[in-house]
Image 1 (cartoon, rainbow, N blue to C red):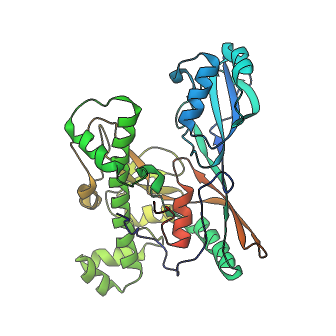
Image 2 (cartoon, rainbow, N blue to C red):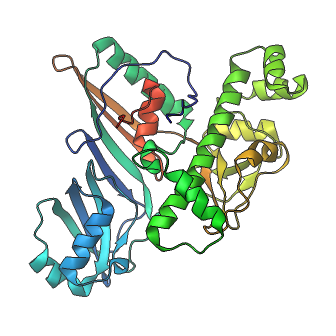
Length: 364
């Protein structure tokens, strides 16, 4: 069931050993804004190992006597990693927390206060540090130059394999729930339906990446033939300087955030895209989602499910730029430490897969 992903770059695949473990995968949240230092909410900067965010919230709820819904968090962090994230809870439960929080898996690094609780999505992005093994010196050098090039040219913003459950098929359950028309029960069902949304987004993005690489790696004549597009259109698309080609009606957004807009002038939009001022977005189908228009609509429509109304729809950046890319190689142990920053909602594994060109998901 392992779909071959469409990669945006054409270099030879690299070899390295990746494992999603607490010793080799580190991630730290970068908050959206700095906290006020006063207010009714206690803000905890927490380092956790071998524990999912859900579990962390359960443990904190138990220690403080709060309901889980009273504990605020910005994003979900993996169990199989060492992660630093921010949590908010009502200040009046600080005593209980101090008295009852006893697990070794949680370390409170800093405390402060804020006037408002932390809400989902209240983060700028995440800083990653990942240790890769069994990589030779030549590949380590190539890894570094490729990662730095992607920092300037960007990468497709696929959802990572973690989104789709152990067997990569959770989206199928999500699809069934989504088209049943029933109201969603609990966070488990929401997660399954959003896996289905993510699956459709990934399929659309793969199609657009493939189409873009056909245009950039063929002559106008050959690309027009392969895609069955008019030559005039391919000529205009081929002139765009960026990897991911924009079409009329594509929904774009100022990067890293801003208001949605439509591509009306392909030349202007592609210039702004090339300068990292805006990025195209893909559809997360659902209630009240903005659809693409014109040519872009026809490319999006096969990956849309208008029956999905149980969840709110949205748009997601299709293309992102990693930042602060640094690597450090140790020739003796053949280990490469890779550090980088990604905007919120983007997956470190997607970036590594684009460089290595193989699926990092371990076969069960």
